[in-house]
Image 1 (cartoon, rainbow, N blue to C red):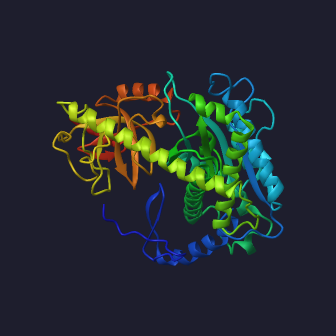
Image 2 (tube, rainbow, N blue to C red):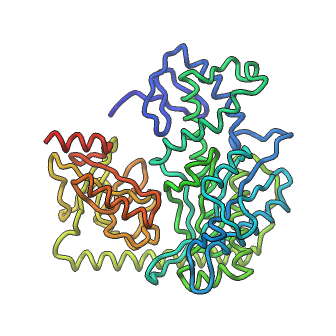
Image 3 (cartoon, rainbow, N blue to C red):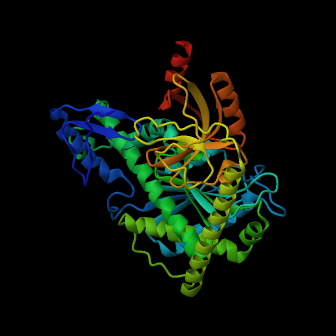
Length: 461
């Protein structure tokens, strides 16, 4: 839909409209623009990584070692995820404490104890943390093998829930003693306040992606890990925090070689240092640290980086050849290979993941049937990724068949396909056993719509 939209570029706001992630387009009267600009400028001071930190304010970093106590997490051949997570989290925190005097490190746990997911988020929120990093270890069922590290940020599908948290947790900044002076009469009960909170949330999400990318680069450079990319998902611990946050999966406990590496002193040190280097790179990009980065081993880092890149290219090439072979040998098109334009996009599509060169964004292959006119279709979205994934990728936790559509510059991967809403809910329950943040998405006449719109369309037939 070609609505007129405001663009916020280099701090400049146009006079017509205002757009924020997940909020749609809000028309703003000219007389309100000045108030909003003043409020944005003032509230930017409260963003943890947007402005230079005040001399008296220490940066608060929350490090969350996933699982613990009776919750072992994934279990490998000889070790448990909870212990790997804790070892790497403590190694990371120790480096920050030793080299970053301006940072206060807060741990959700430092021993083998159980901490509920909500309490982990509450610890960060109560502390007024500037950053939240959750450390986890990946796993695949059925003896499947996968390699590499990946990092998640909050997905847009959960942005609305997170916005409610951000409003509640961040509202304290509006009730300081010098509130009227500092915020120039800004009214926390006005409509503009909600716009500001959406602006803050958008900044948090951007900062989270920046941090995730920095961590991924460090995994390759320092630990020689395969880069499995930055993804979006609806993890509860991320959804309920009110600051930039990421959840990083350090490797696969279900892969023997990776389990062995993650249980060695060298492996723990390298992974902890990788997260530390990613943290420093992120803070430097935000102008927030003077800590020196002492190379683990320049020669080793360069060798690891080159080897990781070669390995990644070799595995990706093998996956593509295998996918193309399967596609060529198949006389019939894969089930559900629909080409569905994403709502608001010119070239969106939904298709079975094959990795073939002919299957490009915005193009229908001859084998791919078009969605029937008036057809209502439900699928269960699993994750969103900035890069194309093989359908055997570990991120799908063994679920199949997996399809994808493109929207907002991301590949959004889905599981199953049905025209029945109740069946879609059943598929969602099934998918959530493997991917906790899975949710139903809907399409009508080949366009992405809300589930409510799809249900109305189905009943009007």
